[in-house]
Length: 219
Figure: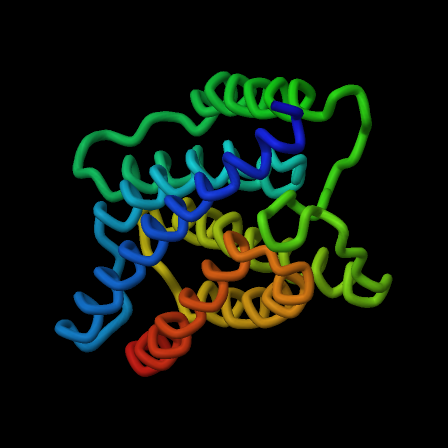
């Protein structure tokens, strides 16, 4: 089997991450509706870790290095949020440096292994329905980059707010960034027929809209 054939065969791996991300938002949304405000529980972050791992592996295999790196970093942030939500004494964030470097090195190694010597930092994935032959126009690539950055940066913004507050929480700003990033990145991934990266923003935006209203109301 060729490298591209193996990538096409392994493409459904990314759909597992969609399940984890979908379940985490469904549970978070359901609990938030019961309490009448936007809340976050440890289950949200545990499911996030599972989703981050599977999507990071998927992106590295499919030669989508920016997504792989962002998911690897989000994995570390999810672990940090679990710690912030704990009643135990908080450790220094500098302890995250070593595991972060290890995760990024592993993802880059997988990326290089599947690249077959050809450098392509953000490839359209090889799928049974597109065969990696789609080439989006430049303006759509720019929208996609901005959307992916916003959709992923929301967790860095959330982490910054959580560190300041000393506890894990999801603010109205987090949900606003989610909505904008989901819309822009969905346009790009829809054109590319990249089902794995499309389903996450689409489903996530449904709960994000309601959580934004709840978070604003609570504020």
